[in-house]
Image (tube, rainbow over all chains, first blue to last red; front, side, top):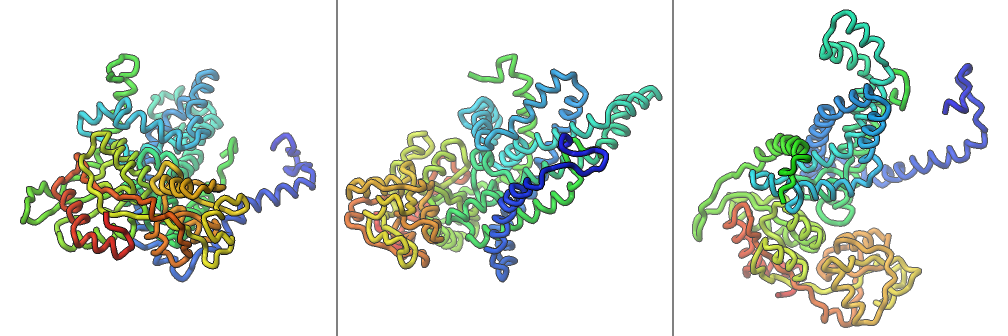
Amino acid sequence: MSAVTDAASGRGFVPRSLLVPVVLGIALLVVPLVALVGRADWSTIVDDVTAPAALSALGLSLQTGLAATALCVVLGVPIALCIARAGDRLAALLRAIVTVPLVLPPMVGGVALLFLFGRTGWLGPILADWGFRVPFTTPAVVLAQTFVALPFLVLAVEGAVRSVGVGYEETAAALGAGRWRILLRVTLPLAAPGLVAGVILCFARAIGEFGATALFAGNAPGVTQTMPLAIYTAFNGAGVSQDTAIALSLLLLVTSVAVLLVVRAWRPGAPR
Amino acid sequence: MSAAARPSRAPIAAAVAALTLALAGCASAQDAPTASSQATEGTALDGELTIFAAASLTTAFDELAAEFEAQHPGVDVRPIAYDGSSTLATQIVEGAPADVFASADEATMARVVEAGLATDPVAFATNTLVLVVPIGDPGDVEGLDGLADPDRTVVLCAPEVPCGAASQALLEDAGVVPSIDSAEQSVTAVLAKVAAGEADAGLVYVTDAAASADVESIEVAGAEQVVNTYPIVALDDAADPDVAAAFVAFVTSEEGRAVLAGLGFGAP
């Protein structure tokens, strides 16, 4: 954008005729969602969303989404710090690795997880000897969600940490602060907006996860059937009703919009 | 064979294993066995029952499970996982924790048996196919020949799933080459698309067609020649083998048969 924007006035010289694709594109994004809202049966929506099957899917989505987000924070913040402070080559390599799940079809992630933890996978038989089975359990949902959501957290936090720079850290170090103290009192507070944005995007991505979950965790109501899977199952005519599917879709939509409103300040590369 | 034994992968494997253990902790609390019942004939059954059933059994098994729970108050039947038989079989073979599996055909059940996870499935019902169209037949499909017209929107079950295998056999017998717009993974997915009016025609089981108010059925000559037989089995790894066996016995009992017959399923 900066190439076409006049920095002095803050308003650029974008050709006005570009409005045509802009309007068409925005319409493509918004009108289908309006159609979804229009299809909802408002008289029964409360009943649909509070039906036992719907509540079960909703509750499971929230629990697994929160667990996955926590796991992403524990694993992702250190990765982000590492990338932000690594040399160019190592940073590029790590960033590429972290970005892979973002561009990969989630189904591929699900198959890969199954080939690691599955009955015939690398780790599956070893864990089975210890009495643990991961696929088709609630923890499998969390792992699948973490797999697809981690890049969102890492990239957001890395951008924030990098943009803050190391100046304040050097000052703190010169004043005698240790590494942990610098991390907790300087680096993370300065990167807080990026961290918040990353956490929220990560959570939104986790509760929307479908492909990897479907393959790796399956579709058992109450155990692995999250909202996206309940919607898919309902749309295919089994399980909860189609009205419930529409109601759940709306709920996911509302959640997503709310999440985006919370992170409205988040833009790639934006100053805090 | 053990991947973790190789030095290069050991640290990663150990890290992942540690993580997995931490995660599995929250599942084991929830999966804690309610009671290790020593139930034999005549004593009360208790425990949890996880059923994986073909999508076409949705109505029937919801009813059967409710009856079974009513007769055995100590048994908690978990919400049943309904999906295409083929999807369920794959999940079971890959380690999904099911106690009972009911498939819409014998070939799909055979995959689970061949994987060494169950023995001696029992046939409990049969089903045949019927052509369904939205109310009023807006696509003028009229008969099986209508499925060959590329201008109509035709959805069928994918050949890999039981209703798809049956559809293929039926169409081959009739000498019709269908112009398929979408190959679905379960019969309920086909029915849902026809019922919504998004497709002009599809082939589903007579039981599904009878249960839907949003489609019209068109009898197909030769449909009675293509019969799907539904087998059910208690899996060897069932958490509570007595409960699983009791449910299988219930489905195949006079009482179970009556429920199935009431919904249009044929006798095995």
